[in-house]
Length: 323
Image (cartoon, rainbow, N blue to C red; front, side, top):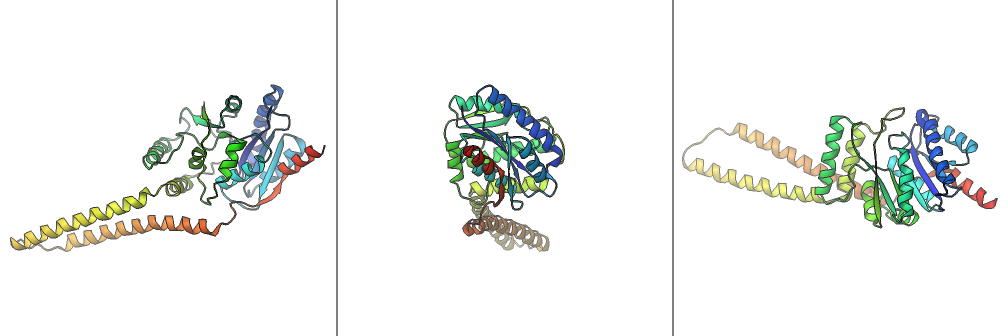
């Protein structure tokens, strides 16, 4: 048997936390009873600077339920930072770590299948959606476009797989050796390597509460993924520059020919269009380059990716070892 820890990042999840705890406790208890995982396996809730009663509930559940533990971050570090904090704490003495969101959209019943795959030798097991029926047409189409675009950029992602996955202790250690501040775990995990597998499941509607990923955050997340893993956009800017130069040369030759033929036409409209078009292109190019420069700025400072205020998981682990 091996020790399994289930890491659950939480941000203002008081409405769903009771049900999440109940469902995950059921899964862990059944796995323990079937002798697939060790009795000291844990659920690790990571409070990412919640403003509601999320941490108080985690603290309360950890006192009532031996399986439940928690990690409290000093402030909001974002979903990816919270995931990494949980993996950092849990992987110290766990043989495998499952990461899953608190909203119960990912099917917890897929966890036993992940465990079975781990037992047979897989070190990374991805939870993959078998449909997107719960998504709007807009979200479904944009997600498909994003995965195709990332593939075109040369970034290896697992389509329709978010942050629901199982990783072995060795895979977690390799993941934690990647020190970048701009986290995009969906792109980093495939770089870890090792034997991998996929478990398919049907994604559900959110059990309660509101989504923590509105359109604005989804766009930012996509941009982070693109600029953190590929310099193709910068190369595209260079290509765009050459293309504009070629157009300029063509227009220059056209203008000279018209001048020689005596076809002089007032050029106010074409001049203004050119100025606005080139100005827009330049601003876009500067913004793209600025995005990369900004990421370099963040990386070179080497600030902590998260700060743990309290670690109930480690407290419980040390207590169990003493007993």
